[in-house]
Length: 637
Image 1 (spheres, helix red, strand yellow):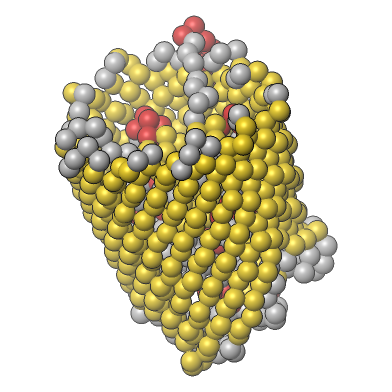
Image 2 (cartoon, one colour; image 1 turned 180 degrees about the horizontal axis):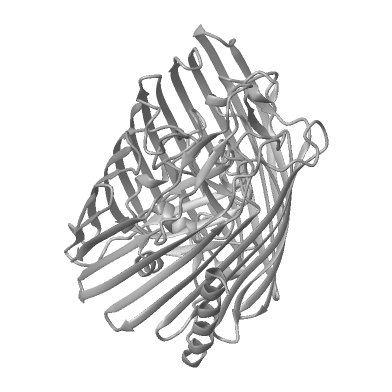
């Protein structure tokens, strides 16, 4: 019996022992991303995964990225050469383009901006400030428009406390000079007005030379109660200074081949109004102003954008409602790059309107949604390669789904979604040919609920067919380096299974996902989508030895994959790898939590591969995370 088999055997034994201590799983979780007003998870016709603040503490997640690793179908790629800034991937999306297909929301406000790259730094948000993370693959395009073609990741921060003063202070230290200082202070100034401030300074070095990241995050929010509603104003300010080591030198792994240093700043002013206008009618308004700057030795980008989204919800009968809304996004991007010989200025405007309806008849819930969106852009080349571009896209998204409530604890669902996304400003700057809108048709069936009073299951089978998928080719493929629309359809057939068992002292979690991703026709017919594995799995155990002491461990498996951008599948596959993380929490007092842990316990060495940029070059490899130890505390008041 090998090590993997022994580990799985021990896990199964623990699961059987735990049967003597059956517990319950709550099915009352509300999914805000399904509509801005919330829907119970059992009634949502999508394979929704939720990571709560309790999960984060129990499993010892030290970042948002770590928390998302446990979600079925989620994979990270670090082939961008930007150490400690991995790209999150859902359901087999191609690395290098996955971020542009996933919308990340913070308290309902999009963090992505299609006015620039469409990407987002997930590590920016302090994990201690997170109340819950909702992940909905292939969901959100009707409600949120472009950027959500492959799904949404919605992050909700913790609500205010009823105390006069509340908050926390903490510190985490560890391997590679890890230093994380965090503090939050909130106060209820009056019965109607509350204010809180959060600050974090997070520094992390790397296993290789010239590899580090220093993030400073500041966020303040004010909430004012009005009659039957609230008004919320917020401000976010962050600075990330980073050094990138680049791809691996085959003669010296630790040696850096890059001298790149970069600074990214992000400022967001946001406002939100929620008000119940009558017994059956509610109003929701969300808006923000963003300014993102990125500067390194080789590139400089300054992006400004405005966003506003009003919605109305009308409950026309019990457990049935209609949502009407729209959104407007206008931005400009000033971009210079020496490596791509570009100096562009772009204006981009997007306008959308949508309607969503949910009707319950007996045990059936029927959902329909439709969005139409118009996008205009005007790109001027000030200097360098490329050409002026201006044009517009008009596209629609729609969804139809049905849920059947088998019992109060179990539901079945089926759904069809038609999603879209247009090229971002960054993609338009390196486009070859005439850009088209990428569209996908997704068919999915699944089930979720509680079985035998102690097993929570969420599973789905899906098929995704994407036309005109936006992808990037290097000169190694024989084409001119740049962005293109795929001339053939890309098909992804997948299965996801998630199980959870909550007992008196033991929590068990098992996730498995498989996606068969391939090109259907044309030059690359039958080839796999490069850079992303077909198989992903993880097993988690949390055991409470005594009331105040809890131990947790998670085993991850990532399958093999072709090198990123290798659409010809001509290079050998990069082998899969496993990883084991451990964490111990000790609650010294009700307010003081002390913790320690080890990530990548067995110090597995693994790499991310990227195809050459030009013919004759070698495949480039980017280093994964080595074993690292951490310890810290958090005092809440």
